[in-house]
Length: 170
Image (cartoon, rainbow, N blue to C red):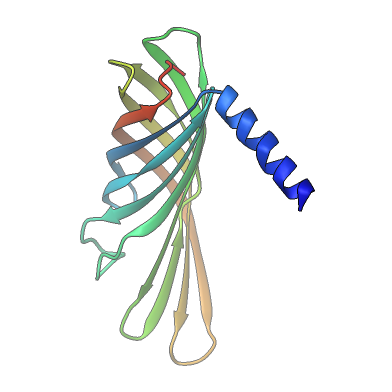
């Protein structure tokens, strides 16, 4: 029990001394799947930012019921300028939809990059371009037939971030 408390204490002290920041973000984007809206939260530790959120696509040829999917991401920042940074990282979206006679799983892993502008210590605006794949797995109800389709994906998104907690310009 003492070891667990010691590990928790060390991790907490490292986290508090590294000026971690929490926040929320929202973005609107376009890719080969369609137009999407994304809301989520961030955890930032120095130049490293981790995102988790929900992504919702407009009605299109892929999704019929428009349930939100899970969005995960990691970003790192370049440059020491306090007003503008260059971000790069990875992003993954995961979706599931039960259609009338099929089940659809959709994954869209991608590499992202773009500029980020800090307006204040709390607000920042970013423009992200992404490049990756879309992986569709379709299972029919007429047996255990699973088909996998893969195609190239590109993305352009505009996002706004609000940070609270320990403020620092990344």
